Amino acid sequence: RNVTGVQTCALPIYQLDPARLRIVRGAPFCAEAIHGMLQQLPDGNRINLQSRSRTCRDTEGRLRQEFERGAKTMVFLRDPNAREFWVMEPERRRARRLDRQGPAALVLDHDQRQAARTLMLQRLEDRGLGQRSDLGQRAYEGIQVQGELTTWTIEAGRVGNDKAIVITREVWQSPELMIPVSIQDRDPRFGERFLRVFNIKREEPEPDLMRVPGDFLKLEMEQRRPRLLGP
Image 1 (cartoon, rainbow, N blue to C red):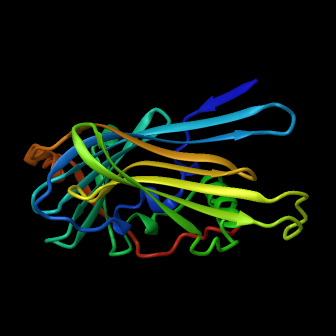
Image 2 (image 1 turned 90 degrees about the vertical axis):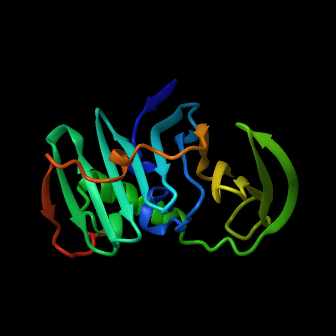
């Protein structure tokens, strides 16, 4: 039996936060992506969560990211020149300015806190450096990408396991655009998490996409940290 759904908050936070992305100038593009996780449960059940996003970056390094949240869309804008972060709700025609923490300052609801708690518990164990293997270069969506495979091995008996547990992460990165185009993280304990980028267009995005529309209501956000592990 398969369980399929769209749940943005179930994905690794570092992949979603524009504040954590490198500021890159002179390499404009627009692209779409699918983020997801697959997990096979012991009873034969299978969890399949996916969400879609769209990212645009202009020559000046301004970044726009659109994320699905169920039937709604959230849009993050980052302007490194103006040092501004905005989160927009197109359906409500309003935009909220974030402090320098970026989207990490967003207040989380109960379900989001539970998802964040699960992610943090899964990542408490430091994997360490791992064993890295160069996968070389290949063409992907008309651009050259460089691949790397990192492998971690948990030896038998370390966490009560009968046999060794092998964890892998395969990453393909565009040196020119300085973005990952494919990530596959496989851990037998937690399943697979992945990112796939597609429909890459190496062109300047429309200027209107990179700013808050003039008819949006602009609000200021209180500067506070989310209580990720709170009740």
